[in-house]
Image 1 (cartoon, rainbow, N blue to C red):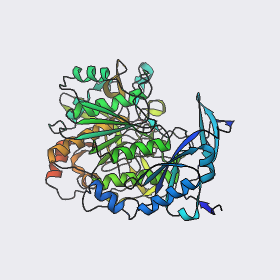
Image 2 (image 1 turned 45 degrees about the vertical axis):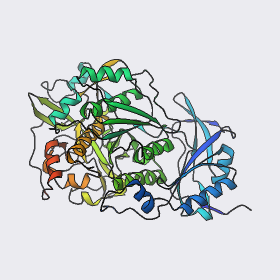
Image 3 (image 1 turned 180 degrees about the horizontal axis):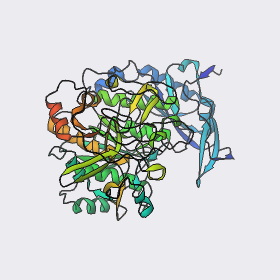
Image 4 (image 1 turned 60 degrees about the vertical axis):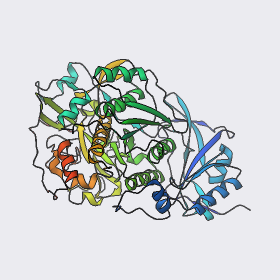
Length: 538
């Protein structure tokens, strides 16, 4: 007898907006689903300690009985149960598309877009009454790309340069080591630390890394390991304008600064499911045990289902409880995040309150000193730092004194993005090597690994994990270069935190000192630089 079903809260998803509907997918296609279940107890917003992975699973993981209920239902529908995991609170099941559709009433069609064919679902999913309140998310029906890279190649030509505020602002570029020097990173190399990097496409060749690191005089070169998650793998395309640019940028920035750290790259598929699985694989990796994870992929918060926002954010809650820092690029599309609907949008996963969101600046560092630093905004075609106010996540406690404005869309006072910043403008970009070519790249994609390298160095110097750094960073804004000039569209920079560059760019040695000897809370930033004129808003 069939069980009565109810709608899975948060599962509603629209059909792809620009793709062409081509018909029904093959009902015999094999589909693997990731099913997330509720926690046995909520994780406190401010955990009193850093938990071990065993403690996290035991206190905040899934109830084995819940996992068993899901497994039993899956088997009753003819599905194969591949795995159950208390720590990640997941059940993985496989069956034909017809079987999985029937089990959860999924409406799935085949689409074609930009040269690729994929299946996608629309509407809601249903679960049996027995699983109502137990199951929180079901992922795997939909194959549309969920996230984008956040890097930009430098444009060349007189038209590009003419948009700069003055003729004196020539194109600049730096090695990651010089950027770290500009931001007063402590003299350390991340020894004993593991930096995780999440990637959703592309790959790297060891020959590129060897040539790049040896060119910087780094010897021995960093140890880099690839981890395949699901069907994801290290698969370099050979196209420097494709996802390889993201992968190599991330590795080269983090690896050159924290050269003695172990760099572990988790390759997942670029779907909602693949992104989630790569994140959880990195956070719960007991073999490599990363202490900081860098994520440079994302997309507008509005492009995720509610169940996806919840599942990703709960994974970041796990990381916070474990003392694993998550650094995330804030996006390169300005305050609209590249959405042309007349509204302002923040990028996710940067908008999760449980990550360190990283915005972007234009950096002029010459003669051993920062000459000026302003908001990165090169216009619609040149890119601008993401930033704004979440429409989904409420204001976290660490931002209560940051004067986060209400959303210009709805008036909702939500989580402000970004938290921190760093050099991201391609006009002051990073010298990198991509698929055998030396080039200059910018984007907030560079800032997430830049900060991940700093966290690894801080962990090394402190002899313990910094963990969720946001409260300590907000309590000490004097440890940042306060960016007061420029805008990213709807939001402008000013003294203190702002929705363009957050608290500002780091003064690494000062952050280390504050973490070694906690300082009293400051209310204003005393460290400011002269600034170039603001770019016009777009």
